[in-house]
Amino acid sequence: MYKCAKCGKEFSSEEMKILPGVKCPYCGWRIVIKLRAPVVKRVRAI
Image 1: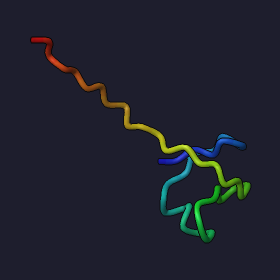
Image 2 (image 1 turned 120 degrees about the horizontal axis):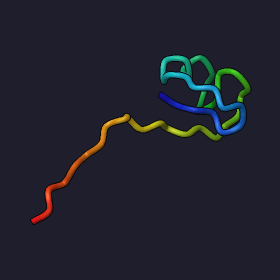
Image 3 (image 1 turned 90 degrees about the vertical axis):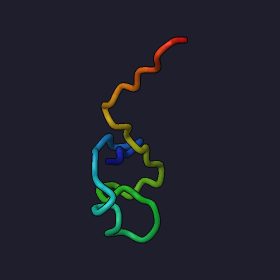
């Protein structure tokens, strides 16, 4: 999942392939943020 820095809409990489290059499919802005998965990694202390 990706998020546009201008309009704030979330979209997948499949939707991003509509336009050539890396752009928001809704507003055409070129600054896109890749969202992280909501998984928390725990590291055990030694």
